[in-house]
Image (cartoon, rainbow, N blue to C red; front, side, top):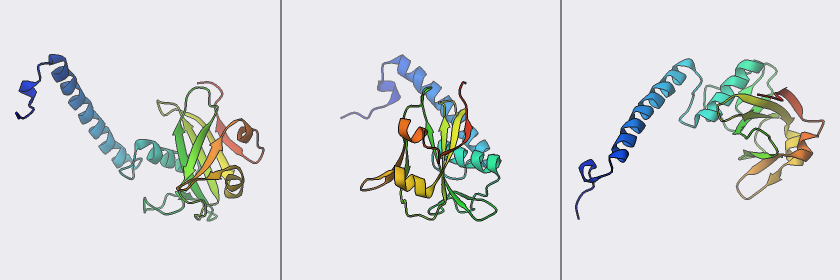
Length: 167
């Protein structure tokens, strides 16, 4: 059996695509490095989660723990209240989505739900007390899910910190 090499691949379109992909990956890695230096990226996770935590902390004056894998919460305010920050990339018309929490018994006071467009433009930010999350959410074998849907969107206990009606 012969080794697969680029010389054996006859499709020149593939070589062009591969070259382009490598250039884009270099840009991506350079951008990740710059986001680390700005303090936006704090872990090897996807950009979405780190960006949401950084943005919410800056917008609302919260402190992010130095330990990026802090169990149970992502940020804390000056009064010691703890916040679990979750984000989702959602379509134009948000009808429903879920925010998953590994451990609903974790030590947090509020869930902050961030809705992004595919371009990371903020569509909305919600604040939900842990008690309301527990009441409206549901447990599966591995996780607890807080569902954003028509019913929860009308619950007066859910605070809309920011909500954009048009983009």
